[in-house]
Figure 1: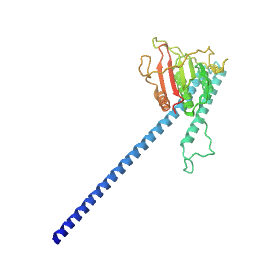
Figure 2: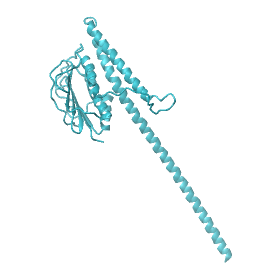
Figure 3: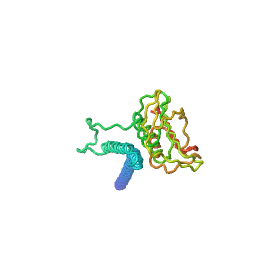
Figure 4: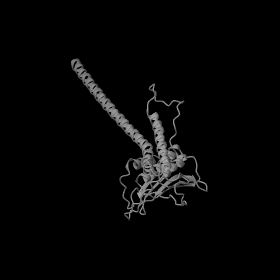
Length: 309
């Protein structure tokens, strides 16, 4: 009996040891798999963060370069056309080219300063370092001046009671106007632009209307080659006019439909700028609508909620 008991105990101990070893092996495998999954998740998150940062940098570079270079191209072309016959106007156009170039360099230095690591390897913000602020609606006047001087008359209307805006929304609103006017300057043929900034109860609404050849006709009026006069404040609070000095309209900016052309289809060939604007607006829970107008030109509308957070 004693021998049987000893054998039974030995077998039980061996079985228990084997079971414990297998359990330990399963536990180690589970830990290994979990570590592998965590590593994969970290790699995926890192790739997503890099992708988002690249997209943000691409948007910033587009906003900085596209506008100023477009103005420089238009002004240089105007200067070339009138150099022999109107030297004063040619000189003014070349001065505008120089200013646009300087503005581009300033904004690029600002962006590179934000991206470049510190000399000591510490990426924390230095309290003594002051970077130039990103453009907001307070710089709408100089923007309109540049566009008008380049040959596109612009009328601006501020509706509602202006009030301080969150920085991100303020910058986004400025970029919307900048991109729409730059596209009108690059791709438009004559006409003018109207900008409405409406401070509503719970949102900021931005609308840009540009005129041009009707989609129902084959007309292709030429863009004026001579620079028009810069923007000036017109009578009445919150009003700005530029270029030809036409009487301003009182259009509203309500509603924004699904992005598309006059027949509801998406307009192609708008490039990175419009896609970047939609991403910017979506970050703040808003929406952006850009489409061709049947009467000619384009319409861009954006709604930016002010109470989303």
